[in-house]
Length: 438
Image (cartoon, rainbow, N blue to C red; front, side, top):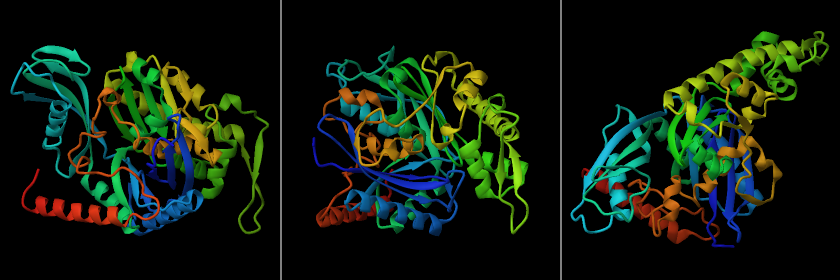
């Protein structure tokens, strides 16, 4: 192995909570050591709505992952989503002391760190600061200024904010299971790490992660994250439509969607019929697959329209040479690729999280529904901003709060000293905050 670092990704979703344990092999590929999953009953539309139920689901998923990987899990990377997520562009600048010295990594980090101090809407916090392009002494459109000479360093930043309460609830659930959060990462960004190639990010691509409660969008161009958004509709609302339209039970509606659902009614035959058992000795009910497809198509068209509205709002509609990459459990819906291509006019493909995968103990992890969890593991080994790859000695995350002596590994075996060090660090930070910090 390259090193002994092991990372655990924890995806707290609307339909499931899953934990993925992984490490890099000698070839730089991600080796999945274990996978744990549990039904999620305490999350609605991507946001924790019941602390106790979510905590129980996390405990079950972690225990399952520990059993499969034979590794004790203490630290996790956690994903965050929900309709409270906002993306905006802000300008920042710093003035350096000398124009003769080269612009260093520290200068770039200082500029990024300053953006975390920007005042946001009440009840929100900045979770990611993504630089777009830099300006050095009025020289614009610089992708990476490290090594250049100049006095004034400026940049446009994509600031991603989330609800403070949503963040606190996630942390509360995780901490109740005696785990520590190393990084809190926007879910579509995590999914992009697992699903997208560098060529797609360079050419321009929109990744669409269709989960149970939300549809997450991230748009990349020239290798940089340009826009992100979360639509509060996912696979669950399609299931609800089927439940009402076909007058069946919730679990029956889910099975109909997964096993027989199609996004294009034209692909379904008029003669295709499925029989659903009746309730308490009532006669069985026959459901037309074509009618089922009409119900699914109506809702999916609405979701695709919202996706296109976000792509238009980003301003990159005509720059997506890589088209749309669909991932998440909802991407497994039959004929969805064709529907998206027809409605958007963009090329589309189904994204599987095997772009950087090596050996896996479970082939199940290669399903699109585990894209976010696999991406959360990858986030422990590669920076969210690809420009940092070429910077020697660069901190993986410029966030002040993440840079406070953060240990990115999920420790195996005896980690008593590390736990004590983290507790002491947290006490010092809390004391510093009480005296008035950033």
